[in-house]
Image (cartoon, rainbow, N blue to C red; front, side):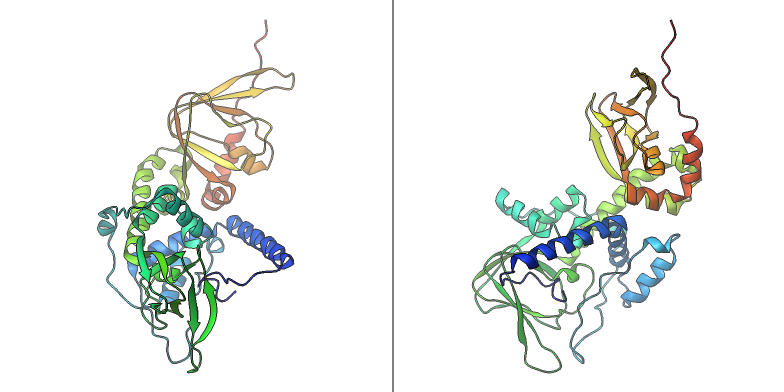
Length: 376
């Protein structure tokens, strides 16, 4: 799969091979989710954008060594290899500050709904986009600009500094690679919906291939600076938004600042309407919730089949941890008592960022009230 980063081959694939590839892809997706690789890559990308180190590998190694839980971290995506003698070092550029990222002015290049849907589908399987929140992805797709190339025109040249990521809107492009001073050879073609050049969004790695338009083509592109500003600005705003709030969550007060920032980075916002059931007693649970705004009602059904209220939760209180700690079904039903805003962690993120709090969580489990009907 060496050329997976460059695009999708256009040659037909036998059904048996497609089935095997589909199964392998599903297993890989499960692996990525279980080990929280997307969140890790997002952290690495943000740090690379902030520091722009010349020695990327050494920087990432040092970054991972500073983490409290090295086992949770994965290696960075390896850049494609260049032919011997033609590879240049990663291109150094000025460091982007937090203020520059926060000052990003949203760019909107007009596109119709069909184009936006096609772009969203095109990046849906790309690891540099799958970790994004919906508003981040929308900002990226809005900022993509149109590139038109005639048949035979070069889109990017092997060995040149990379700056843009491209998605093919119409036409076909060819990917050529020169090795060991031999003439460039055609290695694959990228058709409609395919993408290429994504490593340019992380750092200025030299292009690993030459890409030419086979026929007249329309492409959508985004530049490295815009991608970084959107990603970094969103991450910084999210940290600032949740940092003070998380200090109010009693469970998290034992964490140091770094650990709380790790929690902030992993949080996913969610909203519920009044009366909406968030978790249901007896069902399997994979999410842990913290209330940001609003209230929730906790009810429980006892062995006699009687249901009653056992508590009410408000801002900075949490629920859903028992199922994640014990791998048992939900012990109660939680319903939105008003318009409710929460943040949540899935099982993998919960285990990664709240590991230091497990003893507190297990201790508090014993204090939960059980529903007991009043005697006449």
